[in-house]
Structures are given as C-alpha cells and as structure tokens.
Image 1 (cartoon, rainbow, N blue to C red):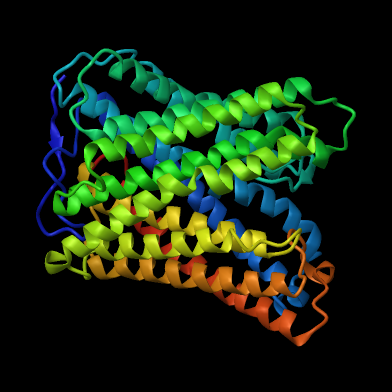
Image 2 (cartoon, helix red, strand yellow):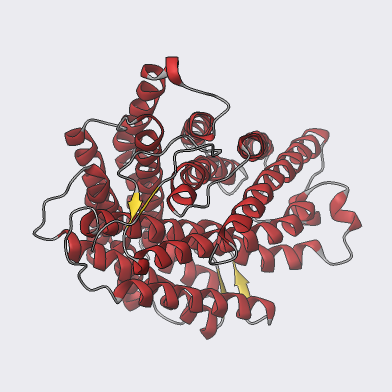
Length: 473
C-alpha cells in the first residue's frame, strides 16, 4: 500500500502541513473522512442541546422558557455530555488511529493488517450514536446525572454505550496489530498507540465494576460507581489526545516536534501506565468503598500532573523557539496558544474545588475546553488539509477559535465564582437557590460565556461540516 494523498501546501487557512502527513489507500481515506464527519456531527448535536441547557441556568432567561427548565435540563444534559465529552473525543481518537495506521502501512510500504477492523469499528460507532439519540428523543428512561458518563436508565441506552465502546476499540486494536513487530518511523504512531492502550483500560474498568455492583442500588448511585473508575481513565485518554494533537500540529505547522522523541515516548507511556493502575484499583478493591473513590480522585489529580506539565512546557518552548516565524493570522499558532492557556487555567482550578458546587464543572469545562481547542486546531491544520478539504478563510477560523476560548474562559470563571457562594452543580431553575446579587451576577456571567462559547463551537461545526460534505468533491 502506498501513500496517495498529501496535505496541500497552497493558500489554505491552515499552516502548511509537513510532507509526512498523508493518507494511504482509499480504504483509509474513507475511514478518515468517516471518523472526521462522525466527530463533528457529535459536536453539532451536543451544541444544539447546549443552546437549550444554558438558558435553563441563566437568570431571567430561565423564567421565559415555555417548559420546566429543571426537567428538560436534566434530560438534555445527559445527551449533551455523552455526545460532547464522550463521542466527540472518542471520534477524535478514531481519526488519530487512522492517521497512525496509515503511517505504519502506507508510509512504510507495509501490508495493512486486519483492515476490516476499521470499517467495522466506524459502523458500530455510527450505530451506537443512533441508539443513544433514539433513546433520548423517545424519552426513554430517567436521567442519571452521574459523573463522566451520565445515562438515561434504560436498556437501549446502556446497549448504545456498550456498542460505542466496542466500536472505538476495533481501530485501536488494528493500530496495535500494525505496530507489533515493525519499526515505528516517528513518535506519532507510538503516541496514538499509547492513547489507544489507555482507552482499552476504560471498558475493562466498567466491566469489572459492573460485576461487583448489586443491581438493587438506586440508579444514580449505581451509575456513579459503575462509571467512576473508567470515567477517570477516559480523562487520561483526553489528556493523551491533547498531547498528540499538539505534537501533530507543531510538526505540521513548523516541522517541530512537541518534545524530543525519547521524552515524548516517556510522557505518552505514562498514560497507559496510569490507566493500568486504575484497572488494578477496580479489580482489587470494593468499588463501593471510599478508598476506591479516593484512589481514582488522587490518580487523576496527581498522576497526570507530570505528563501534562511536561507537554505544556514543551508546547510553550516550541512557541517561543518559533516566535520569529509564527503567523498569528494562521490557526495553528493561535489555536495552540489558546489551548495551552485554557487547559492551564482548568488545571489550576482543579486544585481549588468545593464539594457539590459549581467549582467542579468550572474546572472540567476549562480543561475540556483546552482539549477542544487542540482538536479544533488539529482539524484545521492537519485533518481537513490531509483530506484535501482545508478551510479556505483563515479569518473565519480565527474567529471560532477566539470566540470559543473567550466564551469558555468566561463561562468557567462565572461557574467558579458561583461555586464559592454555594451554588450547587447539576441544578437549574429555582433549585439553584440564586438568593443573592453575587450568585445572580456569577451565573449571569456563566450564561454569557456559555453562549459565546456555543457561538464559536457552532461556527466551527458549520465550517467543518461544509468542508466534509458531500462525501466526494
């Protein structure tokens, strides 16, 4: 199999991609297009729902809604989180596995092993999305707002999640099979494989917890314990996506790796090592114990510090070293800088959390926002150019990056301030208890930031879908 399509270098909104960013045979090209479209579609669905979620928590607006804001808020929030924090990120993992698989086959003139696993995984993931969306639109099951993977308590929804996790696992397994016993040309395939290994630990944690939990538990407690361990592993996966995206964009834009090869390998190997510790925790401890709960909290807050900080330092060094040739009118430079800043803000907020208040979502909205900006930049600077569908207007790309950054920063700051005054998380309408001017003001700031972030996200989704559709050009 030989490489047949290289990223275009002329007059695109992205920085020039390096020559080794290519996609091989038609099979992998179609898969890459499919995973890219699936990922953006998931974000589009999540964005449509957030347009209804944010007003349900915003003073004045919540009183103007024609429905009970608290009831609809909980239903919509479940699907919003699953599509924006689970499917969007796992879709990005699918995108990266295809690019890494191409690097190991097309670029190295090697036979593509287990080729069928890629299309099968993509098909299962699309089917899972339809199952989850159908359950939501049909109003099946009561919402369980547990952490990480909230659910509608209904067999169809649980089945949809199982199909989703199986679908994403298949291209990861194919990548590992194509790496086994072969020389790896550069760090990117190893990095993606490490993120993939980390991901495979999450379903193991889910299954191990499910085997321990009594079915008689109340639904929200049951789901909290079911998804607690594996949910933390998925956050490790998201950190890995951030690191690999940063590396690929710096290589594509300026020919600079994020970190020296050995250091990059150490940083990415730390991710599956952290996930393996999570598997051990789940298998060896009672998942209902406070020790299990605290172990994963500590694993997330402390085990990820070193790889995350090293990656942030590496990106800051690349931006500084390349400062003389950075063009801030190009998406790569601005997107990486904004992603670095927002991810750093979220990390700092994580060490000042409260108990059950909005400081917790302030932390993860900023962290997730940093990952989102990294992936948006990856699409603009690498994925779409590789498909021959690069953005053609740099100014519009800069707008959605800037709007999303500004909105998510304001949103997170508003949530954090509201949390210091005791506003509870996962509530809407009168349940928020906005009984003081400071609470009202903080949640007003939150709502304003959320709407600005949504505007930036909608602009990205609209532009990306226009480039990805139709399937052929």
